[in-house]
Image (tube, rainbow, N blue to C red; front, side, top):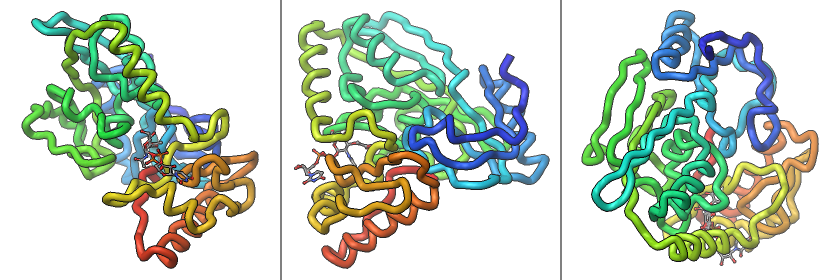
Amino acid sequence: MGGAFIENCGLSGLNTWGCGGSCLWLARPESVSEAVLPIKKARDEGVGLYILGGGSNVLVQDGFIRAGIILTRSMDALKVTETKGGVRIEAAAGVPVKKLLALSLEEGVTGLEFLAGIPGTFGGALFGNAGAAGASFAPLVEWADTLSHDGEPRRWASGELVWAYRACPWREAPLLITKASIALRRCAREKIIGNIRRFSSLKRGQPIGARTAGCVFKNPDGASAGRLLDGCGCKKLSVGGARVSPSHANFVENTGGARAEDIYALTEMCRKRVYEEYGVTLEYEIKF
Ligand code: EPU
């Protein structure tokens, strides 16, 4: 039963940067009906509410956060059905995307190879429209279920969903994506493995084994944030225990004991440099 609330819950173990303070309470719903409870509780108490999935693309602030958090990881229901040309996967928000990739290989269907090397949960990946080399969940989603700020459920048909680069169709957090259905086509296993290798090779040059949250900034139109950051010397920058990765300038590593304020000060320093050098304002990909 995931309906219980954990009061004053520490958050550093729940995000890949390993930083941040504690929240008023944390809920770990296992189902949509359980997820309605914390939404209503936050509304009744008049406090903020954040959604946390794998914690791999988020900067959690230091100190005490007077807000509730819904951790989606226990919402992990998964259903696979055969379709005419392949399979349909209905997955709840907390299913790890690694599991979806493994499942697609097992089933012999194509479309998810872009997930190679991407961490996190399905809900988080949908919310950030995670992707690689132009590929993402966007063209695969048949429908998605959400809960509103009032805990009202709604199903969105694919035609209602307008995706953009690293942005989902919903702008207003903490709208909770609870579940979605994706359609995948049958494909020769060797081809799927080849695609996985190709996507994995795109990650060469990204830091391995370091505490990061993936790319910090979105790529500006027609340019690479990593190249711009590198070009103005950001790889030499650090604040406290946070440093710009020596292997890829769009990653910030927690080398030990970094506070969220160190990471933020560093990313802002980098952003300022890029603006001063190139007149480009970088937009954050990570969520706050
Ligand atoms: N580059 C540099 N210096 C650096 C980093 C990159 O010169 O420090 C150059 C590279 O040599 C390359 C170009 O910049 O010529 C682009 O770099 P890369 O191939 O690493 O791709 P990217 O645009 O930085 C994007 C995604 C990654 C994704 C990779 C591979 C964004 C913001 N980043 O990175 O996604 O893994 O392509 O598909 O869209 C993420 O979103 O968290 C993420 C890691």
